[in-house]
Image (cartoon, rainbow, N blue to C red; front, side):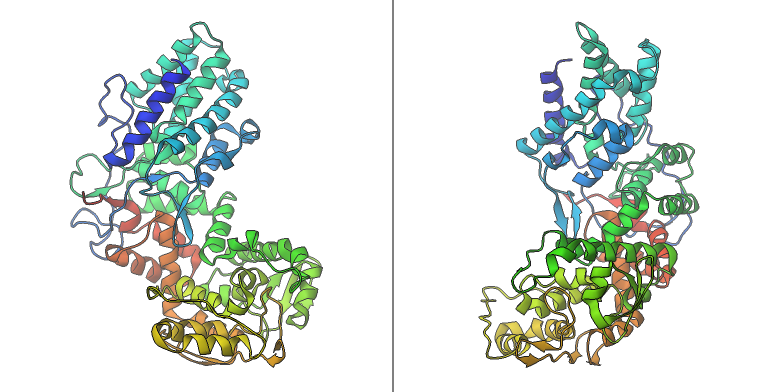
Amino acid sequence: MTPTRIHEIGLGLLLSTPALGCYTGVSSTGGDAADDGTGSGGTSAGTAGTGADTDGAGEASVAPSGLGRLTRVEYERSVTAIFGEALVAGVTFDNLPADGKIGRFETNADLNVNIDIVDAYRLVAEDIGAAAGAQAAALLGCDESPECVRAFLVEYGRLVYRRPLTDAELEVFVGFWDASREGGTVQDAMRLVVTAFLQTPDFLYRLERGADGDDGPVRRLTGYEVASRLSFFLWKSGPDAELLDAAEAGLLDDADGVRAQAERLLADPRAEFTILRFHRSWLGIDALDTQLVDATEFPEFEALRDDMAEETERFILHFFREDDAQVGTLFTADYSFASPELAAYYGDGVVDAGPDGSITLDPAQRRGILTHGSYLTAHARTPQRAPIYRGKSLLADVLCMQLVPPPNVNTTIDFDSTASARDQIESATSMGACAGCHQLINPLGFLFENYDGAGHWRTMDGEFPVEAAADVLGTDIDGHYADAPALMSKLAESQQVADCVARQWLRFALSRPEADLDEPSIAAAAGQAGGDMRELVPAITQTDAFRHRRLPEE
């Protein structure tokens, strides 16, 4: 099998798959796609319409979803898990196609594929294939007998496809190997087979055909498909051998088995990457990495950028792993972690510091993650407009209130030194088409006015005293607040916030936006968790939305 022929096969499959919506597998030798080793759908306990997984008594309540292509992170972490860090160390994964987004979260669901994207996948696959070829003997682990080659293809094919290869698929790759060995070396065969593996839709897409016998629009996921959902949700990578073994044994065909594996994956250190990624993406903190901050106005910031990121990451992992993981604690914690330089930057906001980098906060100045320098700076792209950015983040990210800006409105505000930024924002947004949204946005943002554009506590805005007090409207925490720390306690008590956190985790888990049919799943997970994020994550895996797929309408 020549490199050109492998490229042609990969090109045809990649370009055709999104249009199919129900891809039936590589079948160059005419294999039956129904006999694909994906396992039985199984049955599960639950009650239809509650969001808990149904038992077949009624149609599961789940919104439509299209095909999901692996994101850059999922691709890189998957091949690293399969082939090892050393083998892929020289691969430039930044050459992979750019990801799309659903809200704050990366996803490639329903994105069209063009020739440039196919070519990008080919080039990265060829790099990984070349590295595999250089380590062919170690990967094979035995002599190059037909039995040895088949054993390699069965083992690695299962990891790449996230399910066992069908007999037909196995013969295709055996043919690749044998054709490559005619006039070539074992290194050539390994290079071309791995390159081919990584260009197939079964690797690049998260294909979900559903259980045998489910022919309607709603499909129960097979054990292998549930395994993939679990691993990409909690590890941003393909399933490990233990998870695939559980699928093969039918242990993922019921809710208890799914929960047991979800808890195992969540407890594993590999989940820490995902825990951090969720929180950084959900709250927009990942923008800190590339935020442009005026060095003249904020000369201390650049030296503290990494310290701010590290503070938040240490806090998130401690909160989730060692503290109670309650949503309220996320917003009201009286502790954090900071370098000596960042602790000094926070000034009077830090009342004590430990030798391990832990700090005790003055609750009058800072409480919880929303008063971290990372969050405050990430939502202050233009310092004078920080109240707008921060207010919008509170509404959209923490309260899940989506605002639709009016069309054809000039959003420019020409700030000057004649009044405070707050006064100028109020003057510019209090009338006309802007007022409807900004009566919700501005008060939440104004509560953070004691923090400048780089998260430093202040009492003056230029020549003007800071006015942070505001009246919050349109939420379940409406009322008058003196400042952001005063708001934090109410966020901790808010049912709207708790429901929003469950909604955000579901979006993250499914890599798609929720719709009305997902509301029972969100309510069920939120109700079961009771504000505990460690409980919320496995609770999501028990829902209709997680364990079923509804086909998109044609």
